[in-house]
Image (cartoon, rainbow, N blue to C red; front, side, top):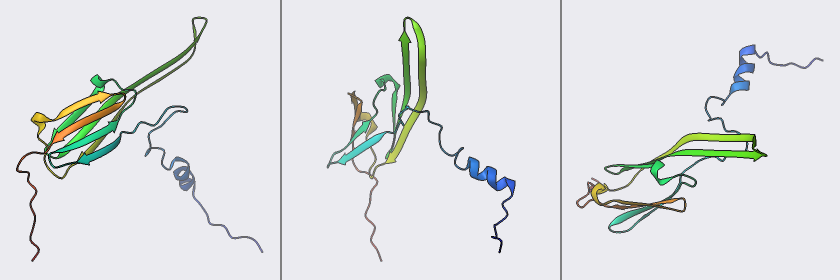
Length: 140
């Protein structure tokens, strides 16, 4: 008896071949995937954020604060060249932008917020705004 197989039109073959191709950014071999990894801590007066952004100049990092929303973005530039006897054998360049946004429980006082970038780690000290909008609701 012959095996029964399901007919698959040509469109399905192309769908399978390109599935996810346009959904993920293209990354070349040996190129590190850039992500901003963070730790967020809270005490009575401040939020403290440590964000790892290695290999980026501090001039290329931007922090935006709007109420309780904090956004960190950085422009990444990576250039590698291998030379032998004044001839370029291989040149790899990577330019891109990485960003991360998050919301805090309380609004941040933008006027007194501080930022420091040392050894690839961005440290943000975000003071809580006095009289924040948080309020406890009574459940009836």
